[in-house]
Length: 255
Ligand SMILES: [Zn+2]
Ligand SMILES: [Zn+2]
Image (cartoon, rainbow, N blue to C red; front, side, top):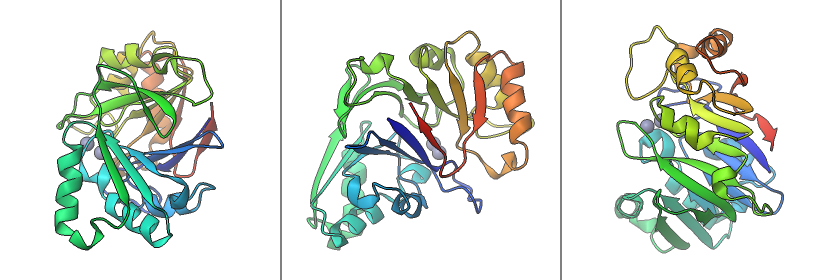
């Protein structure tokens, strides 16, 4: 399967990073994870396009992860697509209902399904097997781990983990242990005072000893601009011994 970074940015825009969004693709099936502002433009440049994405999985409901949800629904309606499924944590139904209350002319335009999932049992989204775990953030949300549709592996052993927005904590290391790729929130450099998001040192400390092939730093605030190599080194210096890279919009990785 392939991961395409559609949006490596955050709630404070920079020119070259859309807000949060990732595309999983195995050739036949596509799954969009998070749908922040700017993600649809990136999605339109992929092979799947917004026409090819009928399932969106949300990590949590902060605006930089859901802002383009109704724009996606509308784009699919205008393109003649008939379905959209939105999957996410508790509260996803009331979020979507509330958005459609405001933009009520979109209500009923396509067959819209909303499904709330929990961390207690794995589930399927867009054909991918998924397992979730709670994050530590200013809002309830999930990190996810994925197995491709063709795989015999349990989702909990899948090659890809996405942290969503979360502080660094040891539970994420055990959740992602054995993954080829962990995409993790690393919103700020060490010298920015912040809670609810990790910085390189706390992230590297939390992942020390975990068996993770590549760590991809993402959800990057403007403060990180030009400091990517320094942040990668900071994660390594704090104890993470896998490969460390920084996400860029459009980056594609095969798993
Ligand atoms: Zn958030
Ligand atoms: Zn965010």
